[in-house]
Amino acid sequence: MNELKALELLLAALVALYLARPMIQMFRGIDGILALPPAVAVMTVLIFLGYGFRPELLPFAFVIAVIVLAGLPRLLDMAHRLRMDDYGEGSRVGIFFSLLIVAATVNFAIAFTPSEKPEVYRPLITKTVERDEGRNTDLYFEYYTSLPPKTASAVLIVSPPPIGSAGILETYLETLAGRGITAVVVTRKSVDAVVSPDGGWIGFPSAGDLISLAYSNVAGTRFVFAAKRGADLERDRAADLSFAIRRVRSAIANGLSPLAGADPSRIAVAGFAEGGAGAILCASESEAGSVLAVVSIESPIRSSLSGGPQDGGDDEEDGNANHVLAFAGKLLSAFRAFLPEPIAGVGDVPSSRAPSLFIVSDRIADPKERDGRYASLIRAFRKALAPSMLVSFAGAGPRDFTDVPYKYPVLSAMAGGREKTDGSMDAGGYSASAADATADFLDRAADISERGIPADYPIRIGMSAELAGLWKSGAAGDILRP
Image (cartoon, rainbow, N blue to C red; front, side, top):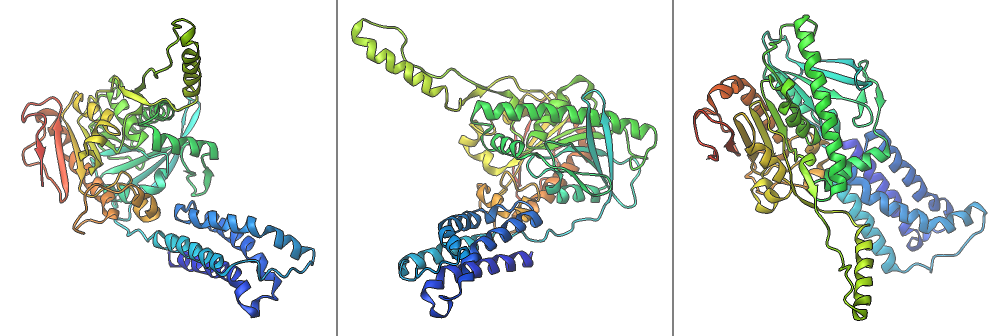
């Protein structure tokens, strides 16, 4: 993305020229320089339109907005051809600090400019639209298959994260296809950025939906309102997966491409974020109990979280002397009604009927994270009705199992892993590592269902695994180290 860095440097140069104008004699008579900040603002908007949402540019965009608003009177004066000798109005210290702020924000944007994602494997990609008449909605299926297609291959139905959707799962899906697994991504409008079978964009979440989804993603394990939004999405994702299971089985039975030759007994479900919780919900249902396995990646189960009563003032009056205290207590209770209700604990969690793999950040090693963000996930892991495995990778952050480290590196940096790695695995490699861990689990899922996790189960570099579930061999709670 060198062209994006060049654009950011150009914008910085234009803003610096505008800010430095009062100090440079030869530029003072060029009134057109006053129009540079609005032009830079327009170019910044065009970058967002052309390159998609760029979080690393937000600080620079905010500074530009402030500069545009501050310079608006001068721009209006120029438009009315009223010359204004303002060269003495700004102090050199103010100009210096303004330039420093612009330089800092541009340097931030350049430091977190997206990098090119290396191509892991070039699969055959097929897209279809399937109508769910029961829910009166269209679901968009995207198939990643190996070339040439393998016979008796496993099929993994994937529910993507709502933020970024299937667009940040390319490395994960390509790696699975390279391992001979057919991956099927299921998306729909209003939640995902949807691509039609002919390759054109046909739907984006609205601004309101994006804000709601982001709030659920950030605060869904802390506040009840955000958790409810996440819980609704988890149930929708579970319904999407249940529908997809039926369609995939039908397509295999009828020999329809690209699933012709796939093994109907090797259908599994997976998901990221709310999609992963939806996969656990789906695998806990009796009709989906025959799936080969379920994979949940960084997926706290928000539908299992509940709030508790908030402390209020004492409503009982103890004579005239307590009137003021009772009234103050009522005011405090009324004020608290407008505050977000915190999560009080974890209620009932779904129990997966299929062998389950939970992939999480190494932040789960932090006791606060285990009791907070991951509390519902750990309980679901412990209550699984089939052998289950919880896997973390040293240094991996919650968003690093997708292509976020490549496409939105600032988001990856904001929520990094707990441990510092020695460089043997950078953030961009965790997505492929998660896919390899998924493929390893699917390859052994049938045996795991019968005999439990084998002693020689492959533990990859930087990987730690905790075991739980019903066992015919081994003990629950073992900790495996690389």
